[in-house]
Length: 196
Ligand SMILES: C[S@@+](CC[C@H](N)C(=O)[O-])C[C@H]1O[C@@H](n2cnc3c(N)ncnc32)[C@H](O)[C@@H]1O
Image (cartoon, rainbow, N blue to C red; front, side):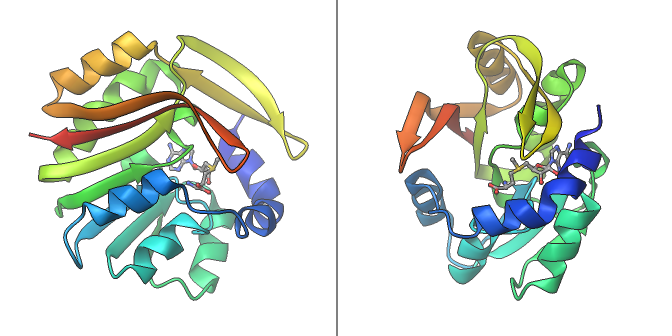
């Protein structure tokens, strides 16, 4: 089971479907809280549509990272003026700190054994008062699911563990929603945290 290979296989189809989707109002609200021309890291940016493009259109300096060669290839060929980098989140190193970080539908693909390591890395990448918006699962589990004919691995910690990890890493919870639904799409858990 290799999500990277599965995303490479579905990248074209994913882009066709995802490009016409609305940007979540939570992403729009997150962007409103980042200072003008601020810097944003988009973790698991896919091919950049619609979120990376939206953030660039709003004037932010966006770095988009994704470990799928094909997703990054499509993103780089697009006219989206982000700095797209082919990288696994855990291999990504940069001296810059960001005003905001978004991980939309990507953290649930990280191995369960690495879930706890997400939060210190995020905290280290954020400037003081920097915001981190993410979607996730909120029930302790690992499972395989099928999307666009390919299999994908998913994992999550319990909500209590996620909150503990946030608190342990100089992040404070601004809000969290369970079962957030808009425009017919559903997210199990969405949270906005701030670096202190
Ligand atoms: C469901 S897609 C979401 C893409 C985009 N955020 C969006 O909203 O359309 C998940 C993306 O996360 C990427 N991804 C998953 N785990 C990753 C990791 N550890 N490092 C970098 N990218 C990752 C996948 O390659 C895929 O493009």
